Amino acid sequence: MHESCSNHSTLQTYGVQCVQILTRLMEKLLEYRCLIHDESKENRMACTVSLLQFYSDVNRKEMYIRYVDKLYELHMEFDNFTEAAYTLKLHSNELNWDETPLSLLLKSKRHYSCPTHRTLKEQLYRSMIDLFDKGKMWECALDLCKELAQQYENEVYDYLSLSELCKKMSHFYESILRTTRYESIYYRVTFYGTGFPEFLRNKEFVYRGNEYEDAGSFNMRILSQHPRAELLTTLTPGAEILECDGQFIQIVKVDPVSRDIRFGGKNTQTIAANIVKFYKSNNVSEFQFSRPIRDSGASGDDIAGTSYERTIMRTTDPLPGILRWFPVKSSETIMISPIEMAIETVDAKNRAIRELVLEHQNDPRIPVHSLSAVIKGVVDAAINGGLPIYEEAFLTPGYLERHPGDDHLVARLKDLIASQIPLLEVALLLHKMKTPAILLPFHDQLEKCFATIQANVEAKYGKRVTDIKIDRDAEVTLRRHISANQPQISMDSSRLSETSIGSSDSGISKSQNSRPTTTSSGGFKNTIANLANFNTVNLAR
Image: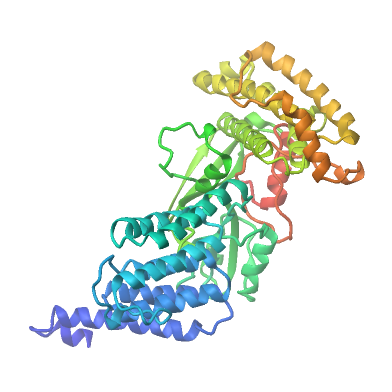
C-alpha cells in the first residue's frame, strides 16, 4: 500500500502519511495486545502510555482519554497515588475554566454527570489533590489548590468551597513541616540483549524506587518481572552481551540533580530542611553516578591518586510523573579530580550535619541515635581516620608543587574543613541536651575527640561561625520533654554503627536486601572497599 500511494499522483502525500500512521498504530496495538496481560505492571503501563501518546499525536481525543483512564486504573491498582494524580492531570489539561458544554469526546466515566468543562475540571482537581495528599506530595497538591482557589474567589465566588479548600491548604503546609517523608531513591536500569521486547531492548531508563524500598528489594522486584534475565555486575558490557538473544539487566543507583529555580539566589540555609529536601529529589530529570578510577601506580588507599568517572543522564520527562520511570534521552561522562571529590564529600557532610541539627532542633521527638552516629563518624578518628586523611593528601606544600593550578581548590577544602567545626560544636551541644543520663559517658568521649580536632583545625585554618543558634537555657525544658516521652535507653540498645562522611555517588547495585552504606571522611581504604563491594564495578578501564 505504501508503494502504491508513493506512485500515485494524488495520494502521494496524504496517502503515504495515512499508511505510516496506520502502520504505527498496528505496531502499538499488537504490542499492547501481547503485553496487556503481562505479569509485569511496568510493561503494561509502558504499552498504555505508548498508545495514549500516539492518540495525542494524531489528535484523537476520545481514544486519548480512554487510555488515560486505563493508565489511571493501573496506577490505582498498585497504589501509585502520585502517578495516578499526574495521569489525571493529562485529562484536566484538555479542559478549560469556562462553561463550555462538555463533548462526549472529553467525558470522564468517573464523573459522567459533569455537564461543562469547569465542573469536570473542578472534580478532576479535587481528585488530584486527594491523590497527592495520599502520596505525601503536598507541594504539588498546594499548586492545584492555589489554582482552584483563584476560581472560587474571583470567578465563581464560591466562598464556602474556598473556605474548605483553605483548611486543606493549612493542613498541607503543616504536614510539610511536621511530617518526616521518605526521600525518593532512583536507579538507572538498562536492558541488554535481543530477548527483551523492542521498547526495552538495549535501552536505559531511570526508575523511581518504591517508598522505603532498599537496593536489594528493588533489584529483586525488577528481576522477578523478567525471570529469564541475569543481573550484570559490570558497567561496560561487551558486544557479545548487546547482540546476544538472552536478557541481561544492569542496575545502578543514581543521585538526582535538582535544577529547581524556585529559591533563586535565596540562602536555603534559612529555609526549613523539609522544604528544601523535597525539591532536591522531586521534579528532577537529571541524574548522576560516579565510579573511582585509580591512576596508574596509585596504591589502593591513595586518595590523591584516585579520580572519578561521573556519568550524567537526562530523562525524557521529570520524575515523578505519569510513570515511575522514564527513558534516558542523553548522557555524558566527565572526570572528577581527587581534590574535587574531596571537596564534594566534605561539603555534603557539612550540609548533612546542618540538616540533621535543624531537624533535631525543630522536633525534640526524634531519637538521639541519628545525631550520635553522625558525630561519632566524624570525630572518632581512631575508627575512621577523620579529616586528617584529606590534610595529608591535599593540604601539604608538596601537593601544590605538583598541582600549582589547584590553589583555589585547596583554599576551598580548607574553608570547608574549618566550617565543619562550628557545625559539630552545635551538634554536640544539642546532643548533650538530648542524651539520656546513662549515655553521658559516651557523650563525654565524643567531646574529648572533638576538642582535639577543633584545636588542630582552628590553629591551621582559622575559626569559623555558624548561623545556627541553640538556646542553652532550653536544655532543662528539652530534657523534661525527653524524659516524659522516651523510655530509658540501655547501653546495649544504643550501640552506634560507624557512619560516613562520604559521597552519595554510587555504582552498580547489589542484589542483597540491604541499603548501601556510605563511606567515611577518613579511611580511604574503606571507601574503595565499600565501592567495590556495593557497586560491584570493574574499576579497571
